[in-house]
Image 1 (cartoon, rainbow, N blue to C red):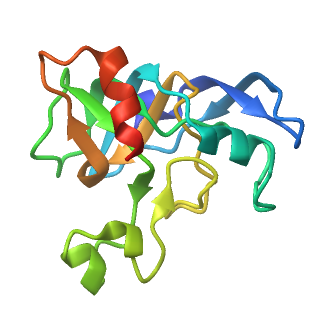
Image 2 (cartoon, rainbow, N blue to C red):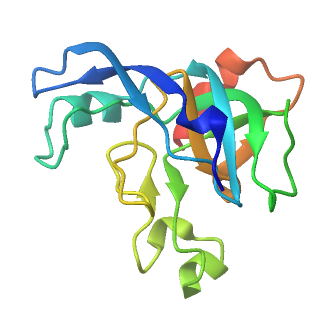
Length: 165
């Protein structure tokens, strides 16, 4: 499925080398697929993992790195198979945005142990072979299963840090 929204430029903050210094970056998000949602990011928490990845402390970063995995935002577009969420919903995204959804672990709701490899919110390789970029940006495309509805009475700035766990 082609998506005019998802192909628009996304603005973010990226580390381009192990100094960890963030600078502005523009990039294109992948198109919204049948099971995906497009989120306008309103809030993103800061976690030590962001520092580890931007500074390549584990020796596995692919630059540029756009960190951020404590994401809260508003749904702006949904794929045709999306059923539990709708445009306008406030949602959160944690450390993963995709997995095979077909192995024994995914079928048991333990996607982080996916046999084929779960896809990290940033610096992971998604199904379309693009490197994922995180929540230090204006928008993100995520598979519906990895989005969590944020209760109306929970302020978004307080919800974002909860999504690390």
